[in-house]
Image (cartoon, rainbow, N blue to C red; front, side, top):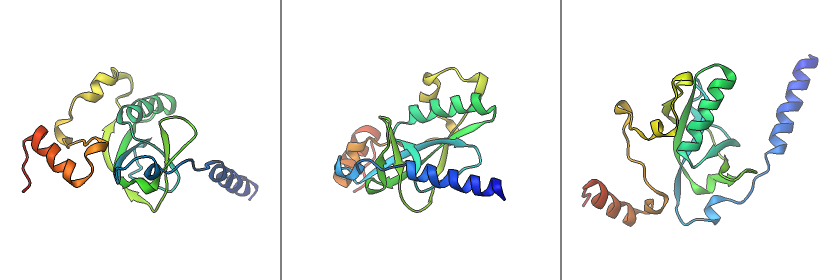
Length: 156
């Protein structure tokens, strides 16, 4: 029973320590962003106050270091979320996802000792190809223009 009380206190303390910074919606005009998270290979959703990043590269590096530290495969998940659900965390480049549980898509599995650096992360995975959209094209009119110019897709 003592261990359970200790565990509950620790979890509550961690939640208290996760004080939210500025809301991303107050800082940028884009209504939606893609968030990434390095995590255990069995996690497939974002939960309230999870640490996240807007950088795929950062998430991959974090996952790879987690693989080495925990000696278990990790992965990176992503989701498109409203900027109203993203708040700054303490470290630059880190944020909190704040909201209801959000299903995520796995975009990367760690390679451990076979990992050769960030250049590898830039190579598209044939089984999991998707379009990454920069922040500035998330508004509908900019998105249509972007798709037409870069991917030769016309959605009239």
